[in-house]
Image (cartoon, rainbow, N blue to C red):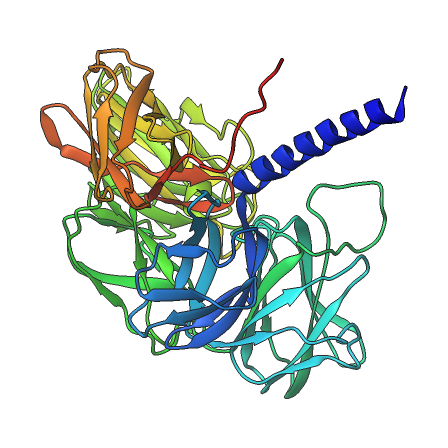
Length: 547
């Protein structure tokens, strides 16, 4: 090959490379993977490092909590985050976006406690990081073998709660271990999986002094290595407190149309007042309850039915259907028991919620007739699943239900909410994505999977609320009985701004069934905010013409 021909191919190659670079820049993704610190205190203004890929810095940020203001700083990957005193505590969702695209949502926490970050070296109990009073701490297991130690002072008889959030919410690929040890290294308490793969310890101080809280981890997906794990994504959030630490409302549910007092379950709650709740339009969703001195919020399920608490001694308690009740598992395989009246041939929905509400119980329900004979048993289909089914009695009469944990486990987090109601046709909708990308003014479809229940054959109506100006949604085809999917078509006028919106659905002719469509992801609570954005064509990109 001659030198002239070689240079000719070189020029073609450089041209193709140049076009590839143009396309790469045009298609550069805005990727958000997390935050450090992982949270902020109400009323604070904090500099936060955002991790991910931001080729077009500065980018914009959207937050599900409108009381948070995020401003990108000149240094790439850093933002100023300001949380007003009106912002409720707990997890919120943040999305990064620019003119060329948007990221997935990631969780950020707001709290009442002082925020701190881990300071190395803190690997040994003899040289821990000192924590002064109730604190929410952002840490990272930076490399394989990393161990983090923190010191917390307690008086004799005080109760310390040490709680890690990592695999849940932050989606860190870690299975954390949490220990309380003495300054000379003796293990006084240990937990592994109190909250699925995240640990939590409730420790009563045997004496006055300093106690060491130690954090380390294995990978959440086991591998062949035999050592503690770590890495850039091994972020965790550690709450340390001897103050009020609620973990659940009590009861777990409250009638959506009712008002009244809701108590709390947890630790160090002496003197903490019950919460007053009012009627809500969000039946079937959870309401966030919190106060300024709490370590974390609790989620109260709002149900169509009035809710009651099942007392420990309830074998003589007969309840009227429909019923919504809260209970906790009992030790040594003892069952919670109550009775109800059933009518021959009238099917009843039986639903036991625990995992979907963030609790640890694997509910087993046994229904017995008036003579004590076992009539039907309901179990979770797989581990970490709620239990549900349909019970149809063969005769009128009083039936007894016994509820226990599949494995006989018992803890403060083994809670369950039971619903028994008349079995009527109904539905659920599942979204296949949480975002809509409109490219070059072309309409885009969003598909909802329709899950009919009990022979539901009616039509479901859909509307979008909060769509940004210039955006429009229409149903692709008229609905018909037996639909398995609902296709929604979104379009936008040129220069339409991006934003969040919500979808509402109801049974045609029955507005009382109206509710928000929820987005569901593993290890995250449901949320209702969809994202929509118009991505205009890149004027600098031009395709390569083939000869």
